[in-house]
Length: 399
Length: 232
Ligand SMILES: Nc1ncnc2c1ncn2[C@@H]1O[C@H](COP(=O)(O)OP(=O)(O)OP(=O)(O)O)[C@@H](O)[C@H]1O
Ligand SMILES: [Mg+2]
Image (tube, rainbow over all chains, first blue to last red; front, side, top):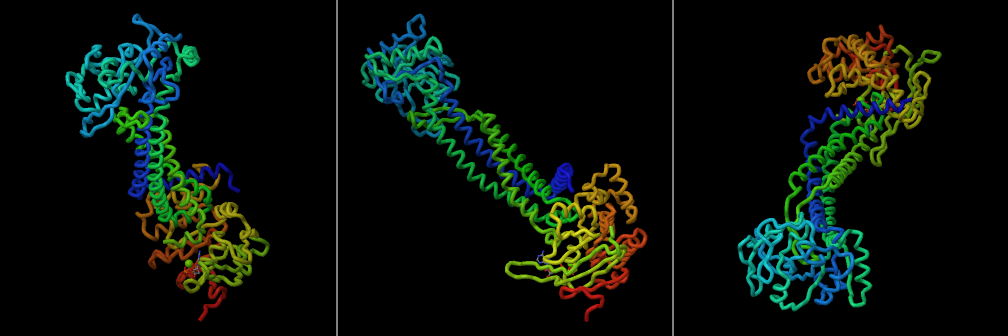
């Protein structure tokens, strides 16, 4: 009887023979591996968009920052506050303070149209009106070039992402929006977060330019700590004079990005699945021809007493090895081609452009490798089973 | 390995039917054959008469549709696949018309193949391989790949591979079918020597009367049955 040790050593022997025949079949083997590499590269590429988008949407979020909206609204677009309401919110407990008072920034925003730098086509950008407090409420916000806008003037500071994506957003230039010209006086960054896709101006100037009167849409609040959130929220939601909804900034952005992230991910999986199907056929083809080219060799080995099981296993190992090579190559290519590549897209939930960078995460790479192994497994399984089930006498008749 | 009266191979009332789609091909129809230990039997017959089929049944490469095949008293037609594979590795040496060497392996590695299924140490395997290549007169070609050897030399590697495990029986399917007269003669002399000097039992399928003349006796296969007379 064959012992298990013997079985494993048979697998190793047969695998070694199979792999030795690879150089003679390098064309077919390489095309199968390249097919798999292509699938993996596209898979990683598309999903890195989703990752990058989600990262951009959550990066600027900080757990000790809260956003206050009118209750019933999910986005700032549908929210609204009067001056009295914003004052009540700024009096709530749990707010951090600076020399100028509570770190609560009442803000409004409008969507404007600007031409994109590279295509010249118009796209939406949020123009946010706020007070200087906003610069202190947002933790990682930095003026990278130029300065802040002067209060009461038609001046804007632009997010680095917006500056990259849209034409004319260079310091010193004037941008015409509606009936007004706005001068670009600074560029700010916020660690790659969503704020970088926005343009900021003085709230009072914006209110008069758009005839908004003394109304705001949201209050951004910096808390003394992440733990102070509950106290802050409770005091506002239980205040009978207010009708508000309080969300942590991190949750707000994550919520805002879910639809888009899911859309891109679904698209990514769908494309990868379609291409994967093609790659499975490529792998099947390679392995079928590998098996049929070696029908007589395999039959000879089995005639000499090698088992059918080791034959199946060794063919699977060969197919998996090919797939792994393709998968690693594809993942590496995607990493070098896409990681950090910057882009901008429309976020349907806020109807504005979000600048982000493709992000290839380790998890994505592992998923990609697993995906290539699945392709290899399916591609190798059927040919291997066929090889093992063919009667030896029939295999020996092949020339 | 032989039972009482020296019979090594006992094929009893064997039928073999191949199915090709809906068509049934009755290749062997109630065939019986006994091969005593130490015999050198030539098996002749027209193309398609079932010579290879019979040889495969004796070597445990296939199972009969009906009837029994016993080798050394063991019913091999009733063994499972794994048991049969292990049995082949232990008891059968196969020589093929087209040698069936693995092109990616050198002569000595090809000869070593069947030994990989045994528990012999690497050193012992090397000894056996050397001895087998010595018997076939190829000690000087051990590191050569099959494609660099002549047909006759490749067949000698094939024979070395067949005898390296010291099998109970040697089964040769047209071993000279692909060789010129001179190389064929050398192979036949080698088989004859294995039979005479080493006591190997050999069953050899051949089309060539010249080859069958080297055997101790010849049987003819025609229309599914055997006879000791050449059919008209
Ligand atoms: N695995 C198989 N499946 C279907 N038919 C088969 C199979 N093996 C053999 N046959 C058929 O059985 C018959 C006998 O074949 P076999 O190979 O035994 O003949 P043979 O006497 O060895 O012929 P040759 O001298 O040409 O080698 C042939 O008609 C062949 O087509
Ligand atoms: Mg034949």
